Each structure stands twice: as C-alpha cells, then as structure tokens.
Length: 144
Image (cartoon, rainbow, N blue to C red):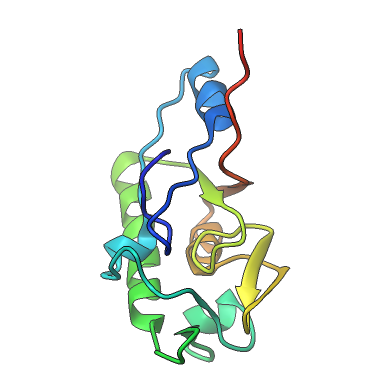
C-alpha cells in the first residue's frame, strides 16, 4: 500500500491491487506484522531457519536474521496481532506480499532461499480461516 515497511526501508506499493480494491468497493487496512511485532525498519533480512511457518507457529522452528539473530518472537507476535486486527474489523481476506517470511502466501524464504509455502503471518491467518491472497507488489496501476 506504499508504506515503507520492507526490511530494507522501501515499499511495494501495488497500483494494480489498489485499482482492483477500489473497483470492488473494498478498502485496505495497511498492516506490517514485522513492525507491529516490534522489529525496526530497516531491519536485517530474515527467513525461516529450517522447516516451515507451521513449525515456527508450533514452536519447532525459528525465524532468524542473516546474521543468525533469533527474531521468532516478534514474527509470531506480529502474526498474532494481524489475526487480532482481522477479528476486530471482521476481515475475511488478507492481501499479503509474496516471498516475505511473514506475508508470503505461495512463496517464502527458508534458509535464505525462496521455497513454496507461506510465511508466518500467512500461515496463522489461513489456520484461522482467513483467505490469504499473495500479491507481487510494485505493479503500476492500469492507465485509463
């Protein structure tokens, strides 16, 4: 949505998604689980250490930075806060940025490489019955 909350301090504004939401009469509620979980922006790149987001949520894996720092707690806290926000506002569908260790829906990062599967927030929301939709970001809105 244009918020500069990526790990590197940049944004992934998605004009295509904004146009689609406007055409459907839907309004986005911007939310960054990594920031809300307590991580700064910018922050070191992070990924799921060895298995998958489900293992992180179940306490059997960690989220680590490229330097080896354990950031599992802020990732899980951010996911839980995202779920609470969905409950508060009756949100049934979440549009999430692909390839993020938090928000990836079809692709996330494990051990520093992109792999099929969700990130921590996407996995928790899906477990709770929220429809999660992956978006690429940085797509320009159609002209006209």
